[in-house]
Image (cartoon, rainbow, N blue to C red; front, side, top):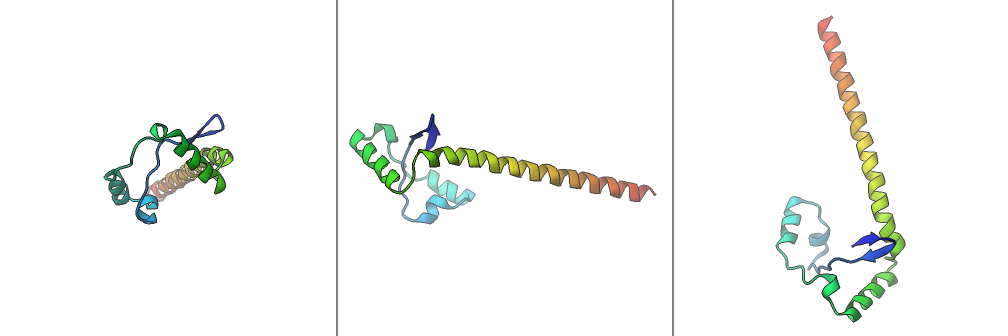
Length: 105
C-alpha cells in the first residue's frame, strides 16, 4: 500500500495463517513469504470487492492521512539513522586518531 497524491494505492493483499509470518523481519520470514501465493493484484479484483476492502480499512482508521504519514515518518527515521551513523563514524575516526597519536608519542 502506498500513497500517491493523497490517495491510497493498494497494490496487493495477502493473507497469512499467523501474524508472525506477515510481520517478522528476518531473512527466513521474508523467504517464507516469497514462497506463498499472493493472489491477484488489487486492481484486477471486482470493483465491489475493492470498494468493500477500502471501507474496511477506513473503518479501522487506515485513511489517507496514515498513508501520507508512513513515508514521511520513514524518511524522518532514515535521516535519524544516517545522523547516528555519521556520529558513530566521527567517533571512530577520532578514536583512531587518538590511538595513532598515543602510539607515536
